Length: 299
Ligand code: AFP
Figure 1 (cartoon, protein in one colour):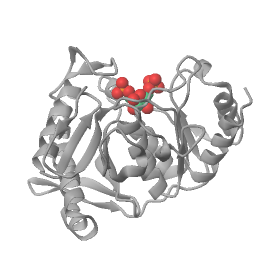
Figure 2 (tube, rainbow, N blue to C red; figure 1 turned 90 degrees about the horizontal axis):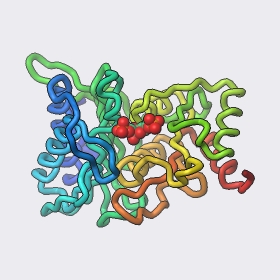
Figure 3 (spheres, rainbow, N blue to C red; figure 1 turned 180 degrees about the vertical axis):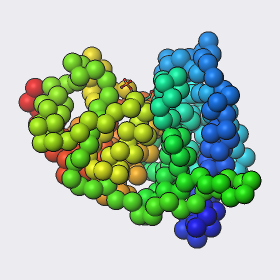
């Protein structure tokens, strides 16, 4: 089944326009991967150095999403101020997730949270979210709250189209794999203890340094991804609106759970557009157990 057909049957007209625009632009991003190389002299609002591909992806997705006419506000990890449009939806995006993987030729991604409220707000206002993985295949994974679906880019004659690759994806509850970011010696002690226990129980480490790449491992095999609270950085590294909440929405639709260590990640209010949060997302039982460990208060 083609993406356009699926969206027409299963989503609202506005969400369908946004997801179609994401899909079309992701093909242009994929085509630009070998061309847009190198770094710029600039930094984004979080102080990260911007690669040429960061700017390209930001421009490409911004133009196509605003052109849908379905977007009222478009906030990007690469911009200090949101763009405005004449639609009703509020979109927060990380146009290029994992830019440090450009030079190492590891997977890259793009993440989109589609909200029905002005930003910043909590993930409870997400109506749909999506992420693209640029790996051995280009895939678009999304949820409108009712199941998680994946489409893969395939060649048909001289055209590329997205075709259904997997429907109603579920995260297995047995934790086969885990991936935690940051330096282990900087993790808060309950996270360190929890990961040691996971290893003793036989979970395998899987970490490539791109959230969507590491998340795909957890979605497929079951387990947990974390970018924890660090000793000197209690709010972690990942952005709540652009990265954490959209992926937590997908986790929930796949039967898993996400937390900031204390509460459901979808309930955390963003105080500013670039607010960060500790992220633990994965199979339901193990992620609940992590939450109990972190919130128990023992050092
Ligand atoms: P970059 O886009 O700067 O490479 O950051 C990627 C990211 O936000 C996320 O995709 C990874 O999970 C995380 O950072 C990796 O960070 P560490 O290199 O500190 O583990």
